[in-house]
Length: 95
Image (tube, rainbow, N blue to C red):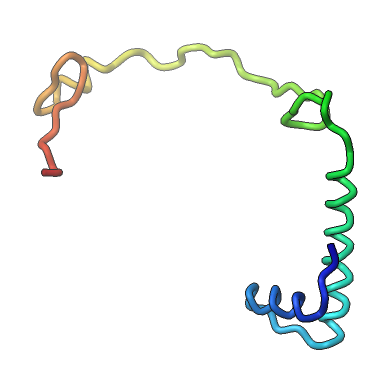
């Protein structure tokens, strides 16, 4: 696929960009290069390739999952106006 100068001007207008004639030609060449690269990528057979989140096999280091704070729910709920079964009861605000 190749973009003509009129299409480049239309894309620039949609992107709220003002391009001179020289910039339109240069931008058209760059966009056509990008589209050619996309066509090249789409031509590659990826039938046997499993999807992956990252190109390298990277493992994120995780911290130890340990409790650092004591359970103080009862102390916090003791000062709440209303609670039930460990939950805070609040007035209905949407009818």
